[in-house]
Image (cartoon, rainbow over all chains, first blue to last red; front, side, top):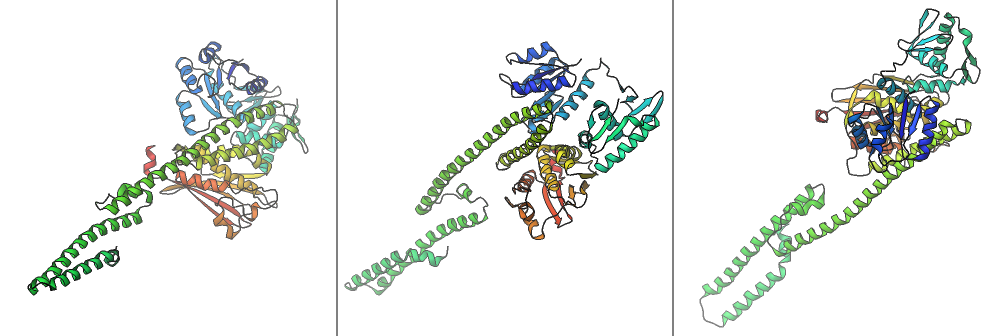
Length: 224
Length: 339
């Protein structure tokens, strides 16, 4: 499991963030004291560190610079300072991303995931998701079942992936749109309907039509 | 300074001098001297007097004319003491010295307020960074405890965030200090970021987006421009028609000297007479006074102010019941390429 270290002096935020990231399948550690911040981070040696700028005793940007001299771990600066200059400085000091508080939690999650994929070359994350009844190929956005391969469009792929992630849960249309908008596919209500219909037809080609169910007035559910 | 006016000031001296000449003439009658001398004495006195006041007049005229002319040409009139040289006659010296002292004290006074404003701005910025902490924490708590209640609180938090953002930029817009950083920025990134930020309201209002031709680069501060776009998009989302499908179209056009970003909606539009006033502070208009709109008249005012600082021009066109179009014109001058 990949290890994330939270360097944040607000205790409550730290704990909530920890709960959230653990829920999303990461191993999470956090610093409780900030006397030897740089050494502590290097000792724990996480795959990724979420670093606040305003820390007691030390400046986050300085920490970032010092860590970068020694380690190649992913660094995401998370701060309430939102000027262009702070961002530029942090990136120059070797931070991989710069997110301002209050952050959009989905964006944070997406950046963590993409950064970990990039930094963790050894783990070679699989480009196939096994959805039991079929397999999703993340590299070329296709689905396959028993050797039969069907191509998905960008939006169909994103929708299916979201449904698989939330399997057996009712997913509202708003939630799906929210997820698509987050990845910059700004589709409207009608386009979503069209995409769902097409996705259903493609699933039918694999004899999986009954898998995607519509719950009137509530949304969709991907059955087991 | 006209000679007539100057001479009026000399009327007492002149009258006294004429009396003196008269007195001398009366005195001379008692003595048997040549007529030539009787005439010569007053003429010599008058001629010398005229030469004297002419020299004085010319010196003063030069100084005061220069002073008035410079004052008229100067945009910042208080700089006059830095430009006009102190003259060599006494009233001029006194005037010049007084001006310098008045100016100095005025500048000190103005600086006092400038520092106060700066101080206040710093406090606001600090406060804003502090208030963002509990908001971020609250959002995390909500994320870990998702239900109908927390979702509703989340929506309110979002409104709070928007108001805070406005306060931050209001503080930034009213200082003289340069607070932005201009560099090459992708319009696409800016637009995407702004839409993502407002996705909740856009999805809730069922607004379809038509974004095209925005793969262009402009020189600007992305943080500021995202804030400006947020205000414009939020306005569009707020003032939509209920009876037909809402749409926002965003696209850019490259011209020779600039890049123009268009944000166009098919909303309720703005009354003809009110269009010119939308950038005024506190102007809410007929639309804004409607129930539930809660317009403060700050959003567009701030946009205009920030645009002015960034050197972008913001223009607005609208037809009532048809929609509104906002244009942001980014100059493409070669001088900004250096940054």
